[in-house]
Length: 278
Image (tube, rainbow, N blue to C red; front, side):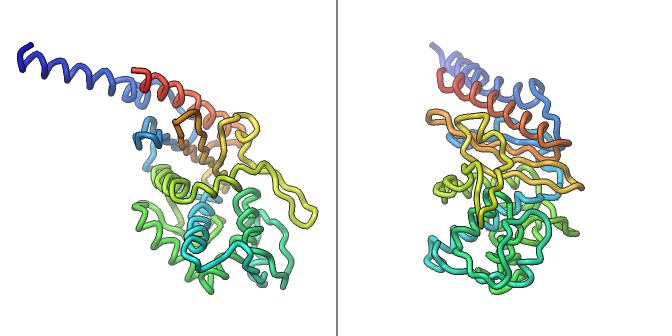
């Protein structure tokens, strides 16, 4: 075989590997949401994207960054799961989704983490921000510093919970980067993100990630909603050696975000199986 023939063979082989991914990403599937992206973390390859760089309010997906900082503090010995966090007036009064912590109570840090991850508790988010930063504004600066460190170049966070705020935005691609870094550095976080419900003070609330019930391979990660943006979901699932992360942002209803995320997961696992079989 001549050098020219060898070169031609290599080009054809590369094309065979690349074409299915490009075709899938560009023409085979349209997601009913403002933006979406999916990665096969085994290869680090983005295997689907749709308007992935469009700016959008992050809603409660913001809590993934807040929790990243919590786990980092735990890893560095600056905090401990059993630490008692006193609930301030500011935390107690925070609106939106709550785990219903009581004013003046001291709540173990790990309980607040579960409240943030499972029921998207805004009151817990403020309490944690005050505890780790000393002040919410300082914690938000820590969030943005960490976002920059992680390569989230098109994001700006204004609070630790994701309630609407002027100038707060992100993109599906940035959320994918955050989610991948989060679960790769702190895989233990999946133990709380995979919880289907959480009970605090005899009040049981359910995880809004409905794919935890519907798909046996799903073990995280976070949902969110604000009226300005719509319904978001970051979903991760592992099948065999393949882990996928799917980000769907700006769906019109919770049902649509769940269905679209599931659609991406199913297509992604098919594609991964086909790729590894070659």
